[in-house]
Length: 195
Image (cartoon, rainbow, N blue to C red):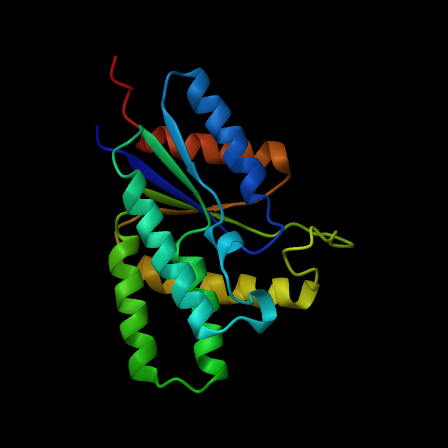
């Protein structure tokens, strides 16, 4: 079995986890086996969000790659809650804060882009308006941080899109509209499950 790996990415509070659960449920009802890779960053032993470091983001990137590789060909569809591209946006921000050179940043980008070519598709969720972000005691509740990271992720995705054939789909709207758009894109890349 060759898995289709679909990355669901976007800034915090863009609906990634909810969308993944809904896609998984719909696919399973249609006979597909589904593996979900949750947010790797939740297991990071180092500070994250606004105070993250290159060390923390190195850990996240390596762990993301390892876990994605571990799931390879174990199910019809792998859904990742975040992916190397948005994790790289956090890494790049941390690298810039400490003045890491452009050459090192380009090397990191090349490595990430090479691995990201293993995705079958990327669903990039556009942030929806929120008046107040509720704390889950993990993610940042700073709206400016969310907006900054959305822009940074968008920059990385656009640059990757110019260098890759992996389709990137921009998903927006409320929960129902995002699900409808996502399922249309997912079914377009899937082959019928083997019996």
